[in-house]
Amino acid sequence: MTALIVTLYLAFFLAQLAVETGLAVANLRHVARAGDAVPALLLGHVDNETARRSHAYTLARGRYGLVHGFYAAALILLLLFSGALPAIDAALARHGLSGAHRFVGFLVALSAVPSLANLPFSLYGTFVLEHRFGFNRTTARLWLKDSVKGIALSAVIGVPLLYAAYGLFALTGHAWWLWLFALLTAVQVFMVWLYPLVIAPLFNKFAPLPDGELRARLEAMARAAGFRARGLLVMDASRRSGHSNAYFTGFFRPRIILFDTLVQQMSVDETAAVLAHEIGHYQARHVHKRLVVGLAVQLASLWLLSLLMRWPPLFAAFGFAAPSFHAALALVSLCGGAFTFFFAPLESYLSRRHEYEADRYSVAIAGAPVALRSALVKLNGQNLSNLHPHPWYSAWHYSHPTLVERLAAIERAGAATRP
Ligand SMILES: [Zn+2]
Image (cartoon, rainbow, N blue to C red; front, side):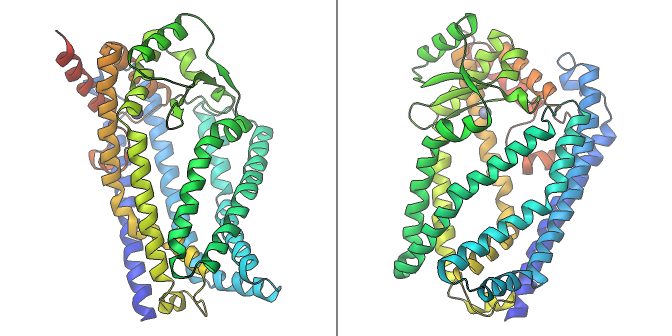
């Protein structure tokens, strides 16, 4: 039985590696073949210099991603088949840890390993790759401060949560997974409240958008759309990176966050079109829908975990002497990806549908398809997004439609709203 489990897992694991590598290589070859020319459909929108830099950036990031993908895959195999996991577990037991302490100790150790192992890639990505293309603005000092804050936050929030999870598992009998689901749901709702008030301000400064033409325009548009926001804030994203974006946080009266990079680089009309797009996501309840789907997936995963817990061959297959809650969580988090990655294209497809919907909404309420198009062209250019994605690659991975697809859809939406 254990040989069968290992074989089945390896088959899924290799399928995932083959599909992801195949798509990445196809995309890189597609980009290399297309060269650094502006695609025909974007002539007049994108300049030659941006096309040249996007080409170089896409190739550099793609190659980095390929190497990182192989490294991460090797790390998973090493953790699963070197006997490291049962050895860590046994070492904790030898040091007298049992019950909740052993559970927490094991999971903390397990989460530290990939973080440390990925450190060279993380440093290279920020200080070499992003730096070479002029995106990185993080200093070594700021990076270190961020890391210390991140670790402290995980300890303050994560460790008590792990103890609570173990307590529910140990005390609530067969229905432990339902109790755990209730706890995780409550924590997620709490985090939606806590994040903008406490966590995000630890890393960035948020200031109200100053009075002026832009603020007046955005407020008038939000009012006209019947959108009640709790605040319109500018975040000092440029402290770390030149990438730009906008988002909102909260369920009922959200805060709208504009990156300072966005405010600096866009005209009033363009910023209004971007904000109208974000309001579109909110009005169409995309965040709420995603939350409901996320909770359903979480419930199903916990139920599955409760079944796996009662299946000793699974633990034996990976070298554990007996089933335990911490070993089950470790195995599911390390092996789960191979069984769920087939859902990625579906998830991407649904996300792209939401993006189209939000774009149509933006055109309808801001009444400025031209501004939305030029805003997207600017965002694409500033982020040096790939101008020639392989169609299979974008269908599988892209949460947003490609620039060409979006501009065409906005054109259609603009034509439909014209009297
Ligand atoms: Zn969007």
